[in-house]
Image 1: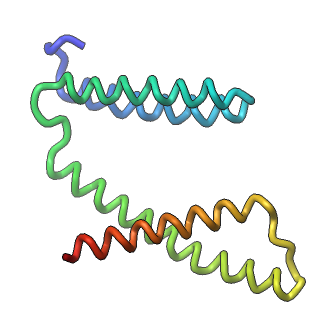
Image 2 (image 1 turned 135 degrees about the vertical axis):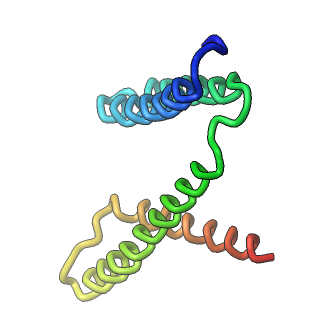
Length: 128
């Protein structure tokens, strides 16, 4: 984009690129084209990165950083509380024979475990 475009144009284009890439990624996977979805996401990511690099000055300010921090904290809290209720409950119900653990829940459980291990490690590192 020429440098005559406003900051809001760059911001909207940056966010739109990530959104379009994410929607294309998910949509193409559902449609049976996972490789094309991954490529579409990669192209959108490159567009977003180049938009941010092409803008002279900071594209996002401290207020934006505060909003992202709050949204991130809320997301981790929601997933944490939900996981703390769902996974032990599912495990207990499976052990009691009242529920059969579905195959698709296992990778989700491992992902959530890895997410919180990484989060905990980062928390420890941030406190140093």
